[in-house]
Length: 357
Image (tube, rainbow, N blue to C red; front, side):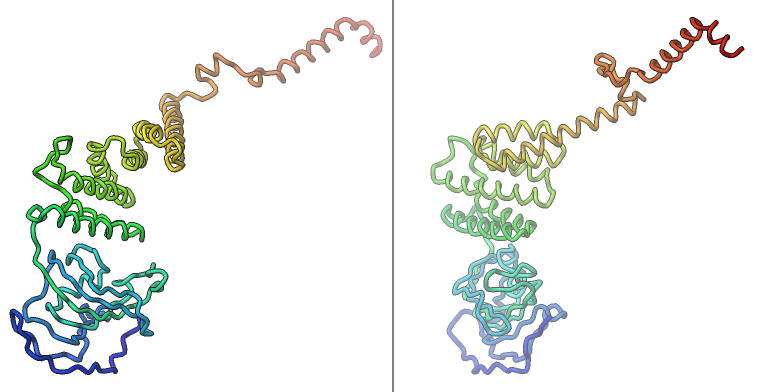
């Protein structure tokens, strides 16, 4: 893993006191702090912040962040990046380093590839398996609050941010992290005081529509990690409100098929196909499940035959409809020729005896 050149010193001026709540640290460390002891996550303070103002898990932070490759090229720049600490909305290195920074602090942070964008990179700017060096400033922090204490527009904004981040992780095939984001989104996009149905207040309906999107996508991610039972619960929550949601029906049918419940899967997929008959994915999944059902039926028949000790050629249907190849033609032909020879020998016995006298 390449290391950041520590020989270059960062020159900073002594920080002056500013009129803010809390005291500002005056000491600037010019040494790298190896957070994990492995060299994969290191931090160096450029400008200190307010003492004892570090965010904790669940707090919302706004940061200014500029990521660079080791050659200095800027590749991941955010003027105002908002995320909840510990909710997997950003790469792991940023999620881990922010709780070690004070509000108002600016730091240089080295993040190894496995805590940044990993083996997939971030096309087209971040190649696979490369570390990044960030300059990070914490602009603002706010404490964790219960979702139901927020106004609906604010909950919508936060919930959609988390859902969209879940989509980003899903597209990177990092499904477990996507599930974390979707789950957090559902918490903000729910209204525990409301029941689904026609009686839902108009201002709540858009919130619940977004919630169903998060649940639907979470079900897809849960299928990807093999959590079929919880996936079905997520998808059934969607279908209770939107019985004709084709995506939810397709994913439910797929989950049932992966559980080996082929008959149920066929029923659900046929319903989805009636709603969207041109869908190639539904046609393919339905064909796959039907083939699995046929193979299962054949396997069950074979098992029954073995259990009962019955050979296939002596089954009732074979006796009812015998095939020609089962008739012993060869044995009958030999017997016929033998009888014919004996009959000829008997008829011309005198002649034959005269020949041998």
